[in-house]
Length: 337
Image (cartoon, rainbow, N blue to C red; front, side, top):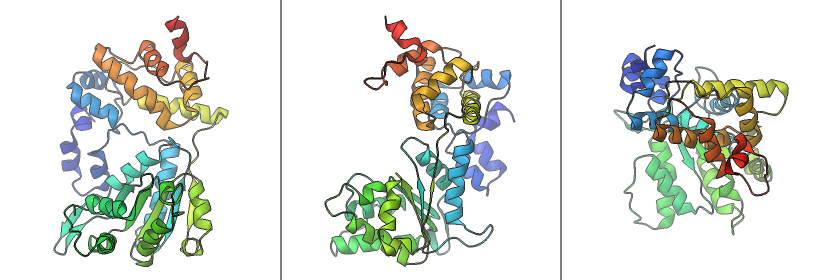
């Protein structure tokens, strides 16, 4: 595949207009630049397009695929069968393991469409916020299903009820609630109000609900029979460990990221020195890896560099090291001295 095919979303969509993968590809940069020619061509693209590639870079590595399968098994439990109805699942794990990126990518494969009966939003991916109220929850559902101007006539209760019922109107099959721990914890009402909303949706028995977030979500669910008895299933998304096999996978992941960066030359992220430092900093969490690689790539773009340099990694990590961590990542302490 040439560089134009890899960077032109319209080309991809035209090639497979009905493909769910095409819908996801339009929103993410997933294709590697495998040859010197492809990398040089990518480096000559406008900076805004190269920045988009960096911002939306996705690598489908082992942890990503595990999370994707968790969502799929709750959405469509039988291959080529009907979608789940009236069930609750959970994808759990620590922060920065890549759960949100997996959810965004999965949801992008099921874009909104319409037919003679109206709009269809097969998968709705929403993110809960700290102490989110019922009204805020309803407002977010309306926003995500293109119903922003719903009237509050009839009061808050009617507004919330109508927002929940809209999921049926737009024929939603899967509702993903990201950062779902905020629905149930650190709240003055012990999560009862938000539990009621989720239970109402599940009780429709027309769609599946997927809770995504911290492992304590399972503790909350198992404390309430109404949730547990709805075919609740939970799986923990494990980040790559420090085992020899996982460290090898981590190095290969860095190489895969490197081949997707829009620079003329590879940055050597999978070489022993940067790989060891990136693992030590990130503890195998892909979100923390990208917290370093993404801004380092920005610096490389601004410098007109042909790749990410150690100096770029030094500058980025120096601003992100936790207090008390005296390890000299990429030699930044020596560099500062």
